[in-house]
Length: 187
Image (tube, rainbow, N blue to C red; front, side):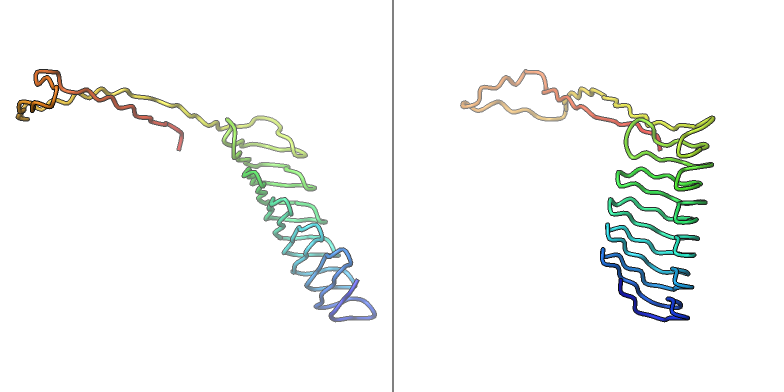
């Protein structure tokens, strides 16, 4: 490990930067040799945290971006998601609500990026739905209208065909058929 910064009684204390051999890096405040205050940590696996620390644990408000592109913005306690926050998953799903010990716990809304259920609103306990839930589902209905349009214009003057045309001037006007796709979905 390499540390550059302020010391007090032989311990990291004050502002400083610590780099570990695995590539992790902390830039911020130290108190009694522990990460403390508000700053950033780059993890060797590609995760990134910017927020508050207490006794070398993520504690308070912070934002963590995971290497797999998941993203959490909210409360932390002892390096676990705790309190209110929003977890955005790399597949587009989003949970906004309460957390405890790194799990969805309490009231929350889970919005699904794909599938029939648009969102689930209710209570969570240890990361699972409990009790009554309001599920809002996607409704997708395809409605097709066949419209037959008859072209007729009585004011059009028709001329006799030339000798090289084989046209019947008494034939019915041409018909065109249009198909319109109308999609109806909830707002």
